[in-house]
Image (cartoon, rainbow, N blue to C red; front, side):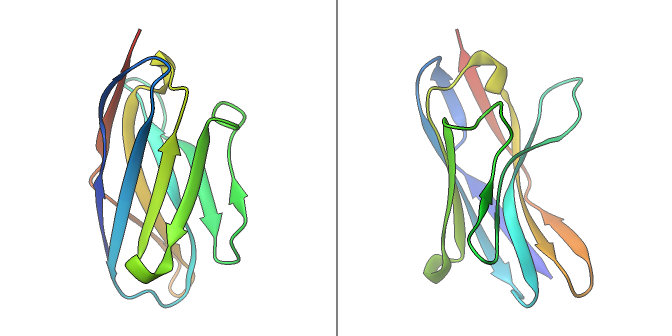
Length: 117
């Protein structure tokens, strides 16, 4: 089992920055990836950033160059630095952890990010 607690959401003007944090607790055995998804009203949940166990990162084109994912293994925390925010980045952001044995994704409770124009 893995428990995830997110923080750092809020309201910011377009062009501003926010940093989200996600702290994990529980069993870290066989974690293969951590990252962030987001879901805006009426939209499907979409991947925002991921970091695999080897350290490689992945971003969709919509956030590439603006968002950066990082992790602090000592604190069991993954971060999402979001710069140059746009109104279309407004969504609930969810942290996730993917485990291999058994295969399962764990999710945080979500944190609201609102970008005003």
